[in-house]
Length: 640
Image (cartoon, rainbow, N blue to C red; front, side, top):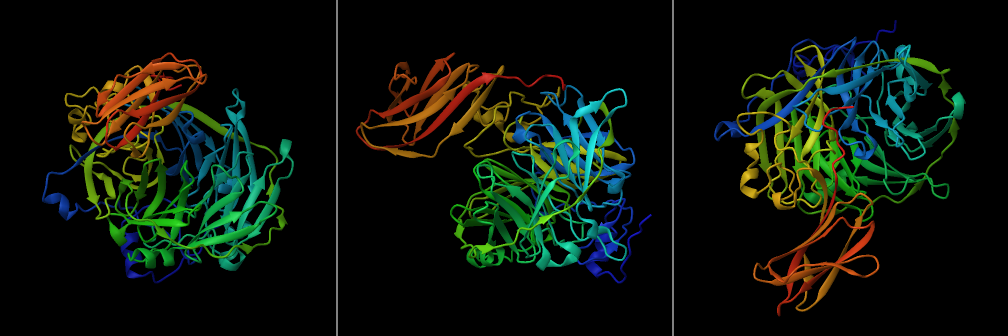
């Protein structure tokens, strides 16, 4: 059995934090030292600001899955960009062996049990000791996990029910991470493209100049994979941990519209980097976080960690300095937002969700949501640099059999303390302090993985609880109140998440005063309780007197209704809407109205529809367009 070496003489800060955390396994420092932790649970200190005013409440729901020689849920993702609605995947970090889990949830979380299924990773994953990241493939068949020395793939469609096993493939691609006398160097995130090629980053034996981005394309029928490594340097794959909360995660992701562009965290150069894998390019360019610190005149930004790209192509990442950072690669404009805990934050996960961004702060035991505003700064990228991309060989196992097991688990609703902060630039943070129960104590701490709950409203997230006092693999769900209008609200139709409570589960959101009983940012009058509304809001747009402007929306074969709304900034402005089908035939017309116009087409034929806003007044106005496509609600009441 391999036993990692230990280091002596930890710093005062390190020693103090070691007393506050228990990981149940090896903890790895980027500098190369490995420590074993104690058993005490950390507790968050109540912020002074919360003691001077009524304590905000946040409702959470948590599920305790049984521990079977594995523990500490870490990485977490939604399935296939959320196409499967209430389904998540997560990975336990330690154990013999660690495991991949899938959870399917009912429409109303508090009414029915959730179903979970787990698959074993290989025995080679026994000493991983840290965070691994998983991503389900686009066809929902394969699950890929990063361990210290291996990449492992579970084929969820190639299973034998009688033996309760599924096929597992193991590629040993980082053996240098576990050599006697050399400590584990890094653990990166995982990205999977549309062809199921797997991208990771790594710094061999701690040498930043040898850092590479790896693309592994599995061979058919157990054949050897095709492996390419771009030698990018800069410490790709390394992750600087400020408070030594265990190995943080080095981010990597693929652009949603251009599969040749790979974005990753580069700790050695303190940058966000872009690798263009096109055969005609093979070049890297970088955006410096040091330069962003100078541009925004804010506290030093350093230590890029996990990153994700939102559906608009913007890169979001968290840093060891406690910032949430964005990068628009098309314009090279960046933003930086300091978390409420400031430099004391220790973020692990980031989860962009259209208008908002979720994150976890393991040091302060917080799950948070940010509604970003403020100035974006132009940060010029470095000149593109040509990098080598030699092929490489990795060891691949013969197909193995991974045990799987499935069962159900019930929800536990809880109320915890909240925290809010609004920056001078208008950016709002809302946080749940998951270890500070209001009605009764809660023993959850060290939240790590986080992902949007795409089957619920914006402002809802699943999170992984890295540590709890109940000897369980615990995951949670949180719903944050969004106090401003968002452009991409998601229908929910579940006011209290299924809680049959004497008091309404989310009264603290003040939804009753804004006519939105189910907290999904869709007004009651356009929100059918038996269907699902897909909403898109535009920006305020000028419209001259007597002029018209066109918008569009698309009906599918199952669409129940199309609803067009135009709201003027002047409540006395007279506006109207006409809706035309793809043949140019008038399908609906609103009467001229003051301030707001609404037109609806019931049971439309499939196709693209144009809706035309007209300013009937004699003065120019600004109007905000909203398109609503109503579809049947296909989320089951009971988890499959």
